[in-house]
Figure 1 (tube, helix red, strand yellow):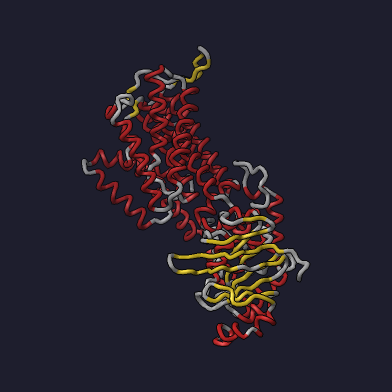
Figure 2 (tube, one colour):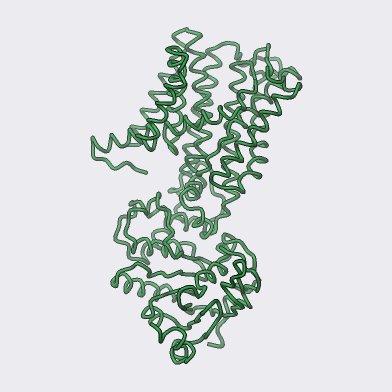
Length: 250
Length: 321
């Protein structure tokens, strides 16, 4: 583990909403290639923390390092271009657009060289090839011509991951990727995430402990906005503070 | 399917092109005005229908170009559209750049109010200044021409010539915008309309794309504004009034957002509706109001949306979004 490169690091990252400290002095490291799960009871500040990482929210205090750079205060789109992709807690797809177009919009970002103003978007072969490759990595049953707003919830969550793959991020931030999924869909997604993790570093916020302990290389436990424990699953499971504060009360 | 559309479009253009053959100056002028409003409506459709930028100040750019043309003509004797057209479109583009930079920080209802406020500011500026002719506006007595050196290529004093120039501009605007809508840039605009947060998370600098869209739309509104002055020889404050912005927005909504052809049809229908009902009764606004409300309530997606729904019902075809 020690010879692995640190891909992302937070130093005393904090977020206050008025007098409420939603995230307090969180310092964690995410190593390249790992699956890092962030768990904690409701209201522990997990999603807020993820929003600080992706730039959706500006941090009140603290420093964010990503891929060897200080990226504190960067906008979401700039962080995305630097290699940070994220999914949202409530699946966020382009509902009015086709499934294919959802992925195509992601793939298009990878070929920023001179796009003509008058040439149809479908005529860019490199973008098309990338879209096809991405659909090969997920298991969507719906037609790619279907409107993204019309496919099932579980498929929308997969589509969101497909969109992320299309921008080939160095780091994928996933906010409760299995929420609202059936057992079968969850199992399928675990397989997909495991496959993805061979090429991408994943940070995921997750409620489902089965998913967390099946997937995670390391786990950070947040309680009341602070880090209670951080480490490999076995040590987190054995941590007595974690057991009392969180796991034991389930 | 696509060849059917192309044939239909060619038939419409051919029918329009035949209008001056009736040798009725009224009819030719009437349709010149309709074509100008088709350009205006399509330019707003790029903002509202594709990018989700509901502007209630689009008349500002039409007006900037109209007044630029009028001022150049009245104060500097400019009568050449080969100079006036690019200069007035440039002025509209600069206006759109400035107003866009200031208003695009807001969203939703605030954006509507901000665009409205800027257009009204321009309205009061021209209305209260002698330079712009005050409430009378600027009346032009000289006709417009396209000249190179001393050679007159086209004389817009001829109603048919003017009509064909405007027809070419309308077709070029439609074809250009239809291509832009299918291009990667157009797809980005549609992504922004659908889910702005998601676009940012994919890495798109959303603000820059919105501004580019706003400037392109404003520039094309400027094209309409320039052609309008060459037709009416008058730039007066009413073209900067917010009612003018509302009218073009109605054309877009009646016809069908995000379809280009819809807003063009909407421009034709709204102008006809206003003209015809104004002939019937002095309470014509009541008739126009009822029709507009009916279309918005019962034909979501406008008349093009209605047509697509009917086609789906009759032929079982899925309307391609």
